[in-house]
Length: 530
Image (cartoon, rainbow, N blue to C red; front, side):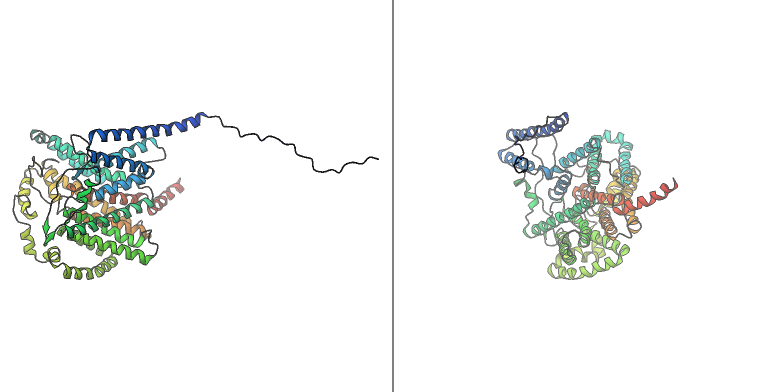
């Protein structure tokens, strides 16, 4: 009989751990690394080139500012060099950098203004994305055909007056004017292609309103101190000054320019943002509390209104009056509420700044004096609008249908051959004739009619989108009313704001939830019929 040892667990033999196998580089990995290496190489070359050019071609202070700007752009490259960042840069340049005042300090035969650089870069980026990125498709623009009709009328005016323009040496000027207008219009197409979500749309609206609020605050500061901080940008940014400071006085004080080319343009731009601020008071994402949000944006509306007043422009009063009238017609309860809220402000304004109040509001009650003020200095620079009407209509009678050709009227500079009209409609009539005015009417009125119809039909059960459509409509109508009181297309900031708002309107008509639902509802019966 043998005795066996007690059985226990079988010991596990010790093994040396096998190191993880190093994956062999594949062709796909090589292909993935190559674009990253190329991007880094291109970035290094570009940064080095900019640094070398700045050191060799620019003054020391400007070169230092340029290098600092490039360094900041490199650090914030993930934000700046993105679609959201590009749209933000565009809004910032439009709202804060005065047009025709600054250019980039690059030795070129022409002034390379910041807004042109941003627009061209974004346009190239959008076209490249549409051509190379299969996930990005063309976004419907909704207003393409009215814009096309207006541009066609401008082109027809140049063609019809071709021999005369060549004889007068203005053919290149006319072609340049048309090209410049197309560059300005590209703002609408660029913004529309970038507005792909509701979050981006709301972000654009919010950015415009808050940038406008900053401009209004600095315009108030300018009115008080006569110091325009936007005219000091060249001291902190690598920009070359193109124009000297200018001053305009009215109602016993200095008229604010802000970041605009003229006080009238400043007042119109700020007035156009007021409907959007009212919309945000109801539907902004922050503050989340309804009362806090309404108080905040109520204050924003008040600041924008005071900013409008600092320009001391009767044109702005007309714009505000037209927008209020439209509100009373289409949204009477909102219109009555706005009137009730504005009455205390009017009383306070009359008590605090009686001279400004008299100039802006009481002057409309004295019709004879108002008409007389618009009939001064006929045929001279700074003449009243009514004084220019007679001489202008005499010229229109000579070529009523096609005018004298777009770009034929030069009102500033050594080559000036015409007088300033302060009336975009009359200017279009003189340059492009009745055909051009018809195109202008199609361009301005068609979006208004389309948005109003959409707000009261497709979006009637979606107040969030219907009110946004109405806010955009009110701003566009206000801009259209201002066409009769200043050369609107010559003041780019307000035109850029118009294009951005039209892009928002195009998104509403084509890609907002009510538009998508309506399109799906229309497609359903057709699908069933198949």
